[in-house]
Length: 460
Image 1 (tube, rainbow, N blue to C red):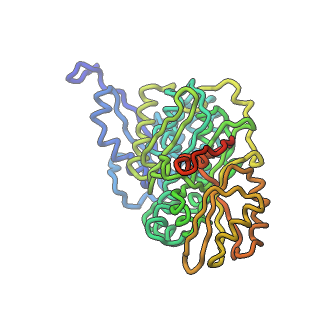
Image 2 (tube, helix red, strand yellow):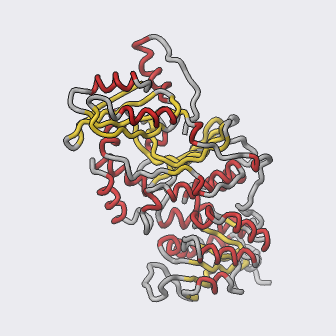
Image 3 (cartoon, one colour):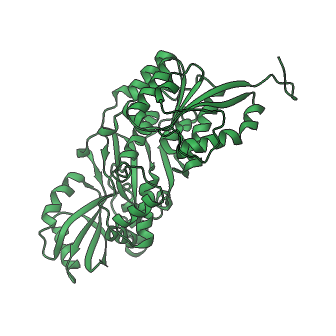
């Protein structure tokens, strides 16, 4: 057999079929060409042979010479002349059918489709086992943050108690824009959509659905058990107002959409919702399209990962790295992956077990701040900190509570709405974790000379 100048054999050629050639697919085409010398140096070559697209006549910003274009997705998935299938088209129907068809006949799959994977995961696992084929989905979890690889290999035998983070770049951009421009949510959403930062259906981003799908995959790799995204408690950012943003800042916090999976005595807590994060915490500094993920465990305390969670090249690079990993290590499948003993016994914790610190925002009349605060305390709401702002011609009072059961908060809000001086129904946002009492203690100990009593809380 012929060899190259280094005395190596001719490179092993792997033929790739791809479903979708939009932003991410176009980026992958560019990266395949850019890194071809690296592939050859390592004894293989990656050749894109077939691509399925919605419109074969559309002009694209990548070179597809020699590639067979088709609008027939299943013809690519079932093609006899591909060795690996890349799925970057998205969706829960045809994309799932095609991916599973390839796996069942022994073709490895690399997917960036978090919705398809998270909602049809048992089927993907079954087809992968049937065809003895591997799956890679690093790009589906957090784009360019290599968290799946870390959980699967570097931390395979670590006891992890929490994985949480900012994992949706679109909502993070919107909240950052609201804070910096002073605008309300609708204007920030319009700006994000105009710049291409949202999904075609922005509800997937702003209602927390995208983050819940990613959290389903991350919880699987962290704790070894899968829960359908629809079972995850999910709230979006559509009700966040400019007043909330301003009050949070005045209380030295920022608002982020946080996704978290935490092991608790009541089971596995899976939640996606807005949260106030103290500006001394790392997550508070994650802006625009950037993502961050934090892991906690008894042996390593805390690990933090930061990177771009959206964009053509960050996502395409994650896809390419999965391809190269499967070429070099054909059995390195992310599904089902490393199995954890006892994972099947984990149950989903209910909301009734929550005990956190909360931010409560109320519309109030001018000069009524002290009376409203006194009324809240008479209702049994343990207020630790408060601030007020005038916003769009109305006065708003914001308070941060001590640790309290969420059921108590929900019961108190209707009563708080009837207090003299309150002009609008109170709303609440959870704090990121139960550390606010510690913050108050640090800031006030110099003045009061005594520690506040510490109570346990679940945290996000």
